[in-house]
Length: 337
Ligand code: UVW
Image (cartoon, rainbow, N blue to C red; front, side, top):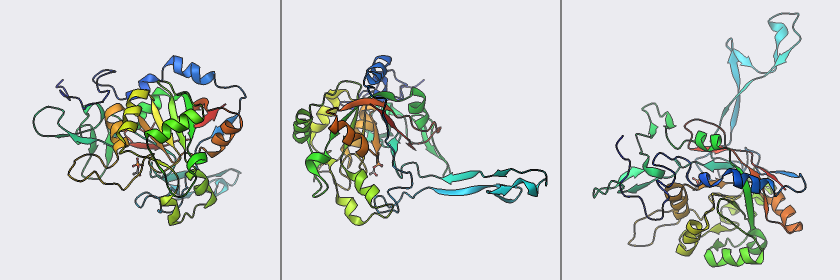
């Protein structure tokens, strides 16, 4: 088979786990890492880390993603919902319901797959950039949309992450206690290192880093009717801080999850006169390193418990839906302490 790339992007992991690898740094979640996660279970308490999937509510946070719409299955030309089976046979006492959901996979608590963000990059060393995702998988060949607007990530789809399992050691850094809701703080390397030290958090290769910013509490407080203030609240990572990007590379973290919209600040522009990504952490993580990003998780209850108990580590179980070809997925992560 023809090679997908000759020149890999700088600071990437492409090829490190084979030229057809579709897992990225999930490869670092090994049997040993699962055991390290399980070793953090001391109390047997569990925390659901998903928002209700119809939250945040409306389109304030993201204008193009809609809350789930539930409809009944149609059976014999009528809705099969609260269906009285005695209509079919007077002797039947059953009642049945069956639903269909129109689900924007990235409306609420979600994982971004490695096919969520790619880049223009000259991976063939040809003088012209190619449109590629992690490990050189191609726009239009591996990640496709047909003329009926049907989409499929034939490579890098969510099913890869689901099949790997995603269970390991989670480590939480509490940004909310330091930075609060307003004004929004863009957290760079120096701030993050200071907090990691202050909160005595230890992060090792293969750990899943969870960043609690407090946005989940605001979302829950607004009960499905968020106002514009939410778009300017709570900490985000500063993707334009090169030292922070270098730390993500060096730390060996396997994934990053946060309760905010996009882990990093959105709506920024690349510096004047430069070309590059407007979401540099997405570019580094999803495109170069194969680090999945989790967004809009509900971390507040876990964070409160960890703080009260002087802990930062836990067992994290966080598989996405095994939804073949999807580029993002809702999930119901569970932390066990
Ligand atoms: C944004 O909404 C910008 O982030 P993501 O697409 O990763 O959800």
